[in-house]
Image (cartoon, rainbow, N blue to C red; front, side):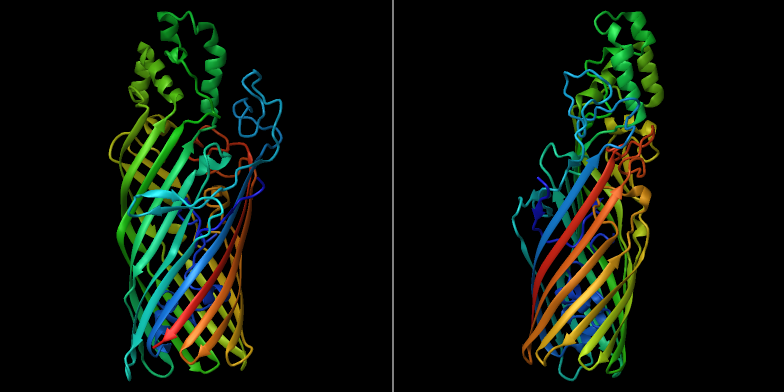
Length: 554
């Protein structure tokens, strides 16, 4: 399968990050408003209708009387992931990774004799986290989804104040794959959602040139993740070497002396392998009410020029939910072997290892999470009476996503073992070191009035990556990106407008072997979410969004 096309509603991809992390700017503003999408989101000085609640509340003063906005969005999402072997590939002398190696159990060589070449691990379908069900739901391959959003605004006759509220999704994304997909070690299913379900907002016209506005957004936030786990690092490669080389003579004729000298490791019925599945982790955290606020200013000194400024506040949350971990037999056998030897028990006590590893573990989990603040400013200028250009610059504080730290309600066996290799792992905690940065970005849009009724639009927004080079990964497959938009607006009468828009976002990323500690860097301490150690990784993401917006004044 060369690629898989998905048709979910999306405005972001993360991982997660966590997810939701979002997934270069995690797809921000891809599905808030269709007219804004056609103009490259350069609308701070020229916000569209009731969506001004999000883009610049001050522009609500442009609305007269009672107005409603309804829009529907259909999205096509195509994520391709590739893995390949560089020259000299090995992890502690082993290269028979089943992801990239054809060799079966009948081949006893430590080094692979038949590599597969480029291996596909494409996303296969969309996944969304459903609040009521409290679980991720797979939409199925090729199933389109039309998602509506809506808003209402009212400007009382003769009043300088306008009141509005809207339902929209600043950030919603998810993807998944079937069992056995090579990409499942960086998230078999991932979902990151922020849905604003109530946004009471007021704008006030100070004078003919100046308007101000502000509003409170009441949102639902969720992060969900299901991922296979494996740790292809040097230490586990050494444990495999001990099992296959040192322990082989003692497998069937061990005694108390060998148990003491070899710490009981050789009593394990299944040894550790850097390329084997270490287990699977599934968790979901959410918060039903996450408030934030938007503030905006709109200055229109002339008919052909306007300036807009908006600040969207951060939202700090304490997300809570549940987790479930399935542990592979190899980790259970490692501890069982240590506990069979007096010296192994002493070593386990010194290292803080558990006395046993259960087949599965479940409980409660929580995390502190901050939805990042955003600031944007822009201008609208009419070059000619029928030709208008918009230009915006914006900044998002993704530096707040330095780490996603999960705190569990009890000690977890796998974490007690893994903590030896990473400061980001504790007996009851797990931190995903994302290290996001806070970039500046710009967007430009052009609107041409072909007739009194018809307007043609085009926009471009290059998106600088918020992910540093050393943290790139397949769980967040939108890195540096380009967004292209096109659309048209048609006025049926003085009170009815229709906007039809299409947007296309593309993002390609190449992660050479040993360059990212969240993807493919080798070494002893690169244990946490580094499942493709030593491999070359590539991602290719394409998002196509088609939307229709219907605005009516009453």
